[in-house]
Image 1: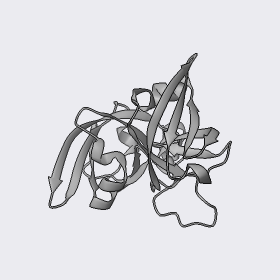
Image 2: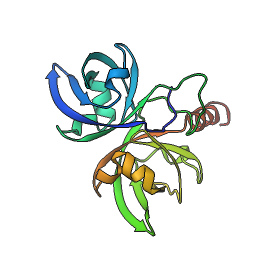
Image 3: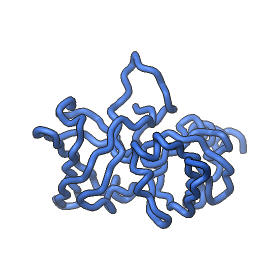
Image 4: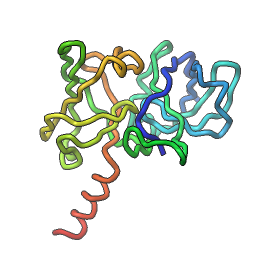
Length: 197
């Protein structure tokens, strides 16, 4: 379980394919605080730490994860948003994030407005009922508030701190982004589909 509040910006140091799996070596200032078998969200994708050495650690993404996220499109040197799992005695500063990406969206537009930024993201059809104005959404692991949703896209506002301390400053128009819709909205949508026909 995560909150969508990024605590560190890691960097991909190496990528190694093994069958359909992808081993990612990540350089991070939190590496020495991690433990083997610990869960860490990478651009919003929950992955398990399998080895640690100095200021680097390794995680493995399986084929299903690569299909449903942008992790397979990473290259060596790319920044990665990192968040360790939530402590049970901590504050829930963002919203409930599972680390299970629902789909890959795309950046459609970026506007700078008086020191902040508005990003427009599109998403595949069929998910529009999971987004509500002023609701929560997780984009590349970052908990954000939905603005101006339509049946095919939505916007988010990014403050300078988030812009500087996440990989949002590297996102360009056309880039793929990981989306995890709000779990409460997903449960309500399923309930409505099953019981309110």
